[in-house]
Amino acid sequence: GAVVSQHPSRVICKSGTSVKIECRSLDFQATTMFWYRQFPKQSLMLMATSNEGSKATYEQGVEKDKFLINHASLTLSTLTVASAHPEDSSFYICSARRRDQPQHFGDGTRLSIL
Amino acid sequence: ELKVEQNPLFLSMQEGKNYTIYCNYSTTSDRLYWYRQDPGKSLESLFVLLSNGAVKQEGRLMASLDTKARLSTLHITAAVHDLSATYFCAVDLNSNSGYALNFGKGTSLLVTP
Image 1: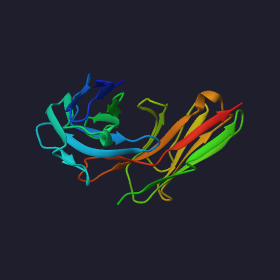
Image 2: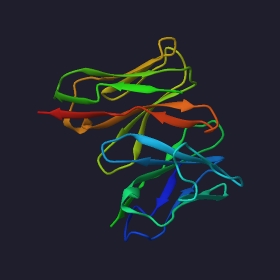
Image 3: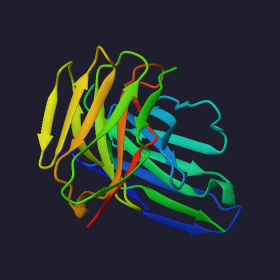
């Protein structure tokens, strides 16, 4: 089946550090990639939608200057958390889909900001 | 705005018992999904329901979809401890989000001996 690789799986860093998370579709070309955030004991909330070669569409309340998304190719999207603070600590999950096919999820990245 | 409501949010059940989790959504949608999430892990796809009346079964889990009632159910038969996890339903959000998923709050299931 389709595989989405997300890296790194865990990040622990100091406040003020910028963190980059990669999401790759390994065996298919993803027309769209999505970034979700999940706080403890809560559901997944969509942060942004990313189409290859175009600017990401951010959900209301998500700061585009803080959560920088680059979708450089049909198999790679990156999320950079700029100058991360403790309140940005969360579980970040990417997903990828091809046209109208179901989404495939990465394994997630647990971000802990000290 | 599409709303997806799951109930119950917490469920503790004994092994061997049956139970149903409900998922209601507020507007028409093409697809409904069920996922399982174990602690500290990402989502595992369980079912994709594509049409009214769709029923799918995998092991002790069975999912159904009634698009007219905007209701999906996830039925657990003869629960075992390994089914303990959080279960999410999700609906395609066909909008500017380009078919992103709108998730319910999740049902945290604990199966006890």
